[in-house]
Structures are given as C-alpha cells and as structure tokens.
Amino acid sequence: MNNTYGSKIRKGWSLTAILLMVVLVLSACGSKAADNGNTNTGNTNNAAQSGGNELEQIKSAGVIKVGMMGTYRPYNFLNDKKEMDGFDADIAREVAKRLGVKVEFVSQEFSGLTPSLQAKKLDAIISQMTITDDRKKVLDFSDPYITNQVKIIVKEDNNDITKLEDFKGKTIGVGLGTNDETYLRNEVLPKVGDFTIKTYDDVISSLKDLNAGRIDATINNLYALKPIVDANGFKIKAVGEAIKSDQAGIAVRKDNPELVAALNDALKGMKDDGTYNTIFKKWFGEEPAQ
Picture 1 (cartoon, rainbow, N blue to C red):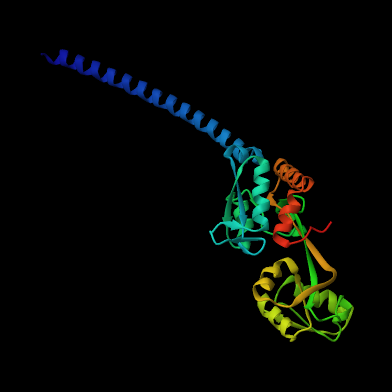
Picture 2 (picture 1 turned 90 degrees about the vertical axis):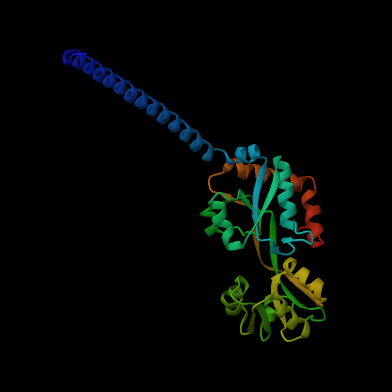
C-alpha cells in the first residue's frame, strides 16, 4: 500500500469519525431536550397535585392523618390497649367515617402540632385546640366542636362561694402560668377586690388542698378534672354559672375551603342525628350545653 492511498484512507476515516460525532451530539441534545420536557411536565403535574384540593387528596389516599397530644384525659389519651381514645379520638373517627376515609392518629406534644400540620405531616389537628384570633392568622378552623366552660370549684360542703364576687377575702388556687391565673390576676382581682391567689404546678395538688380545706376554691374546666376527681375520690363540686369559656375546633392548613366545608358538614351531621350527643355523654356524663 503506497503513501498516497494510505493518506486517502486516513482522510476517509477521519471524515466518517467527525460525521459520527456530530450525529451523536445532536442525538444527545435531542434526548436531553426531550428529558427536560418530560421533567418539566412532571413538575407541573406534581405542583398541581400538591397545591390542589386537599379534601380530594385525603379521599384519594383513603386516610386522614390527625394530630393530637394523647396525654389529656378525657379528651385524648392512650388506653390500656395503647390505642388512641377519648372524646377527641371519637370525634376524629366519626368525622373520618363521614368523609369516607380511615383515621391515622399521630401523637406528639401540643407545641409541635401546628408545625407538623404546616409541614404537611398532618392533615388536621383534633386536640382541644382553642380557636383564637392569633391562631386564625396561620390556620383555618372548622366550626367549634366543643365549648369548654371554666367554673368555680369548691368542697362539697361549701355553700359560701357560688360566684366570683364571693372570692373577696378568700384563698383561691390556680395553676401556675395558666390562662386561668392571668384571668384571676388581670380581670377578677381588679373587679372583685382583694383575695389571695395560691399557685400550683399541677392540678392534683390544688385539688388535694381544696379537698383538705387549705384553699377555699379553684377555677378549672370540670371535664378535665373529672378523671382526677374520680380516681382520688375528692369531695368537690362545681358551682354557679361558667365564669368563662373557650371553643375548640378542627385545625387545618390555611386556604382549604373544601376541606373546612366537609368537616363542618360532618360535624353538623353528627349533631343533627344525635351521634355527637352520644359521644359527649360517653365521656362527660351529661348532655352538651346548648
């Protein structure tokens, strides 16, 4: 083989190699463009799904994830079988049933419930979350599903105290750092006149002192006290009208009108057909206040 012929062959192979490289580059670019197009379409679909109707997402999943403390008898707690139980738990199960889905309980400290909801680890909070103006800035709420009344609580044989005005000159027990303590100091004291406020780190200590006559009265949500009273046999009673009250609702993420409407429909249906009253009487032993 002479040099001229060899040179021609080498040039031919070089041209062929260049053409192959061009074809490969163009194919790769086309494939990348196609991949990018597919990825963008997928992202668009995912975005639409994540920002869509959360009620439909819950129904599609077949489950609603409900956050609650699980440590607040009789509202929500773990029973002997380590199952979530209580008034809130029964409300959650019934709501889920009426939405056509199952309920999955997620138990954690109260302070972590709102962050978990906002991080989409939960679909709703049903854990005695009081509806307040501050909370409504970051959460949406269903209609109230319970009104918790705070009453004056005295010994069974005490007939001297039936209203706030009777606190004058008395010793009143209350939980340290609670809303009830703030209420006594900022609202009741200036209106009623001088009385002594004794604070406690836990409810049972205040009830022991009340039962023993070391304080004259306390104020609290009677439903929250009932398990403690029943377990210890304290001879105490609630008197007079409720001195204040708050309402708890089902909390969900902001801007979920369809989900809120469905929750409200479920709660209304429960009240209309008597299911709500049955659950209420089961846990609190009386009809709900009208």
